[in-house]
Image 1 (tube, helix red, strand yellow):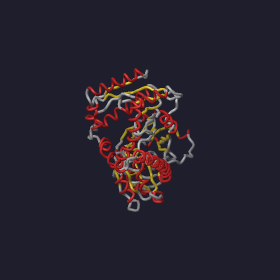
Image 2 (cartoon, helix red, strand yellow):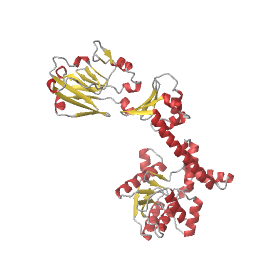
Image 3 (spheres, helix red, strand yellow):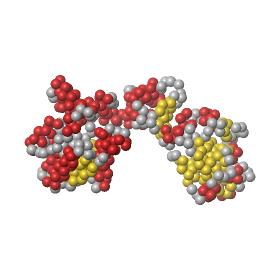
Image 4 (cartoon, one colour):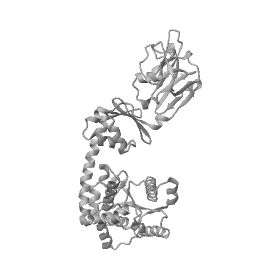
Length: 452
C-alpha cells in the first residue's frame, strides 16, 4: 500500500518532499493508517516533513480525552511533533445556530488553518478515502447538485490535500490488519442520526447488493466525472468572459450573448450561484430574458435587474445603504480625500489664472465656480423630488427623469450620488454638473472636483 500511496501523491502532485505537511489525526482507523504511511515513507527513499494536529471536541466524554491521549502517545512513539486543541463544540453550535456536525467541521478547519500559518506548514492533510468520496456524491445527488457535486472530494483544494483518496475502506482495513495497528473507534460512526452515516450504513450496503464491486465502479465514475467537471469549468470561464463585464463593483451580463450559448440556462445557473441566487431563481431569471424590463430578483447580498439588453447585478449593501456626509472648507483645504463606497472624492481650490482654460472633458471631473458654493457642502444619495439644471441647459430637470434619459438601470438608480450646496445640486456625480455653478468670465477661483 505504501507504493500506491506514494504513487498517488506524485500523480496528483499533492506536495513536494521539501514541503511541510500538517496531518489531521483523530485516532480513528483512517487517520492512523495515513499517519503510518507517512512514517513508512520516512523509512523508504522518500522522506516527508510532517507533524500532527488533533482536535478534542468534548462530544463523547472520557472517550474524547482518551482519543487525545492515544494520538499523543502515537506521536511520542514515532518522534512526531504533536499539537492539540480542545473545543466546547456544543456551546459553539448553540451560539451560531448550526448542527454539531457543522460546528465541529468549522472549528477544526479554522484551527488547522491558523496552525498552518503560525507554524509555516505548506499543507494540511486529511484522511478522506475513496468511500468518503462515494458517500459525498450520493449525498449530493440526494439533496440536488450540479456537475461539481458529482466529482466527489477533491484530492487537492488550496492548502488541503487528501492523500488517502486512492484507497477504499476495505483496503485501509486490510492495511491496518496487516500492520497490526492500534486505533480508536468513534462510537458515533454507528449512529444513523447523521446523514452521511445513514448513507454509509444503509444506502451503500443496498447498492452493493446490486453491484458488489461498487467501490471499483465508482472510482472509475469519479475519474470520468472529474474530467467532465474540469472541462465544464473551462467552458464556464469562457462563458463568464463572453457575457459578463464589471464596472465599479456592478456586474453586467449581456442578454444576447447569454442566449447565444448552448445549454445557456445551466451556465447561467452556475454563474449566478456565485452571487447567491439559487436554482429556482436562476431558472426564473433565464425565462425572463425575452420578457419585459424591470423585473428584480433578490439574493442575500445582491439584487439582479432584468434590464433592456443586460442583467444588472449590484451588491445589496450598495443598493440599500443611505449615505450623507457634510464636507467643510477646512477639510478641503487640508487636502483630504473623501471615500464613498468604491470611489474617492478629491477637491482642489485654485485661482483661475493658475490653470489652462482648456479644461479636460471627463465625466469624473468638474470645475465649479468656487464663490458660488456655500460651505459645508453635502455628499448624499439622490431622493425623489430632487432636481437640477443640467450644464448647458436653462430649465430644471428632475433627477429621476435625467436617470431615465440616461437609461440607468432601476437597481443602480439608488446608487446615484449628489454633491449639494445648501440643497442646490452642484453635481450629479460622474454624470452631469449643474449649470448654476459653471465657470464664467467673472470667475476668480475654481473648485476642481474629481472622483476615481
